[in-house]
Image 1 (cartoon, rainbow, N blue to C red):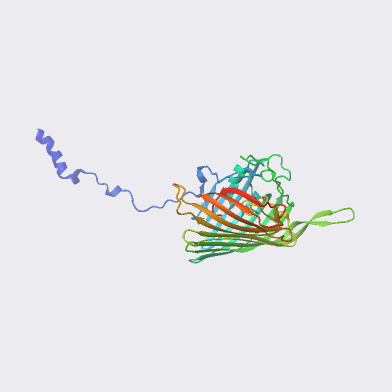
Image 2 (cartoon, rainbow, N blue to C red; image 1 turned 45 degrees about the vertical axis):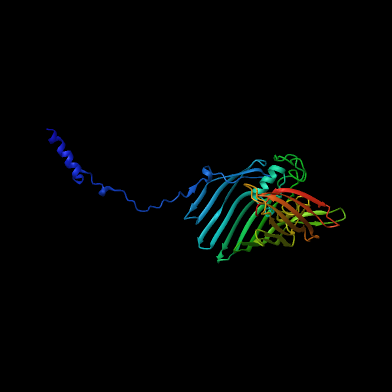
Length: 401
């Protein structure tokens, strides 16, 4: 009986195909399957974007979903930005549409706080400086804005050329205060009238309708990088202030006018000898006719002219140039931080309304390690501006702009 029971088992082991299950007919398809991400997403899982901090808005926290269709062919952000010091919730829609290779249409519609001085410091650096030492290198105004821009990119192995045309409609008004009493918090400089309590210039309330055109250029060859951007704005309708001086005193009225303003911003970085590098930066604005204050730009303080009071120079015309030569001390190596460096710097600039005053020059030397640095600058002129000191010491970060 035992043999009769065991025999079928042995037979099954000897011929497994006779009793095993045939899975070939129901085997899953293992061919490549492409899974597309959903078109609507929440960045960082909850929709938060990179916040910022300054002396007018306080903490700005943007939130909202992102829409991506067709592998970035359509990329839109629907945002609401909360500004803690103003107590405002600003809605906006911004993004891009790429109808074909090299073509891009960008749009912005919404309410916000705007500045013409963001070329001086990057957003992260300006937020950190405002929060820690109360140094906000920007002036601001509020506006409802709608803007549309078409860009055509031409790319080669060594350059990218991007001409663009566009238009905008903007209705602006002043923000902040000429005599601020309450300011956002900062670790230092909160009550300093040249820092967190620095007055924010007023602008003319009204609407600006304008067309824009320009070109962007990027050059890259080996370790050399250079960028140049030019923008020309022609406003058909803008608020302008006209003043007369009758016997009873000056009388000013706000009329409607037109203006043309051009902006140039350029940077270049390249190696020289060994690990030494040279960096160059320039920014210039030229305007015709009468320009409303919301198109003024400002200059002065760490990031531009350290011996000059923060943003003490301003107007519808501006010129700034900066050159820095950096020398790493390669024979000195500090664990986790690398080699310290010496930086030699020259900067010159000025700004005014309808005219450019004499240039203010700065000569400086800096010492740094990793991203931290300390600089000492002097104004060598014998007839210095009342807004410029003989010398200035500044502490900051060495981060490429």
